[in-house]
Structure formats: C-alpha cells, structure tokens
Length: 58
Ligand SMILES: [Zn+2]
Image 1 (tube, rainbow, N blue to C red):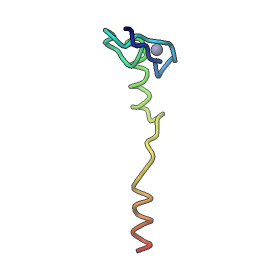
Image 2: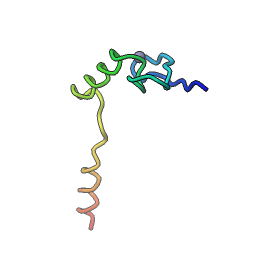
Image 3: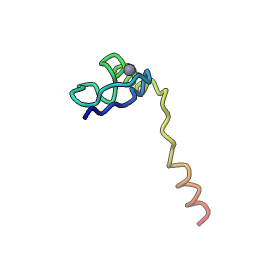
C-alpha cells in the first residue's frame, strides 16, 4: 500500500513511504517551508491577547 500525501509547499502528490522529506515532496520544498516559517510568512494566532482580555473582564 502506498500512502500519498500532498506536499504543503507545491501541492504535488508525494509518496509518504520512504520519503525522507515528508510531508514534502523534496528537500527543496522542505527548505522553502522552513524558510517561510523563519521569515514570518506563517502567522500563529496570538493566544495571549484573548487571555489578557479575559483577565480584564474579571
Ligand atoms: Zn513539493
């Protein structure tokens, strides 16, 4: 059975089994994704704000 997943970077179908770069299709896509994280292209929702608001209401 072959597990195929979509590469998060280029959306190409990539084999999961035996793929050292999973979930990416290649080292290139992996590096691109890591680079995107490093440059802040991805934003993690800031949970601190809502926590602060809740504290103020108390
Ligand atoms: Zn890819």
